[in-house]
View 1: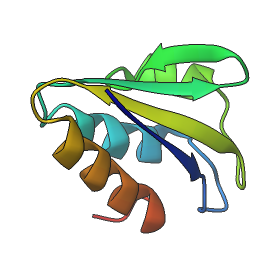
View 2: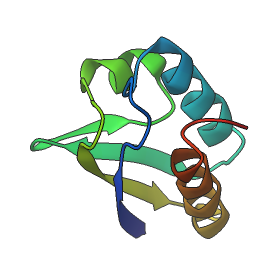
View 3: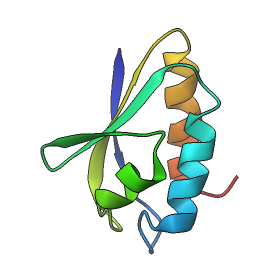
Length: 87
């Protein structure tokens, strides 16, 4: 398992469009992807779960990946967050 602390950089936070892009990217990998925020841990491959976290601009969260392609999953999602959800 790999975990990495990241910060939401885009001004709008994790609303529907960024959550959709995140889920689409996460689903390219077979590893389990989860997001930890404020004491909860949610499935990173579910748009409903991501949006329920209410992540806003400058919120810090932990990205978890566990499985055969966990390293590339973490890398791809880190780049996505760094690019403010632009592909």
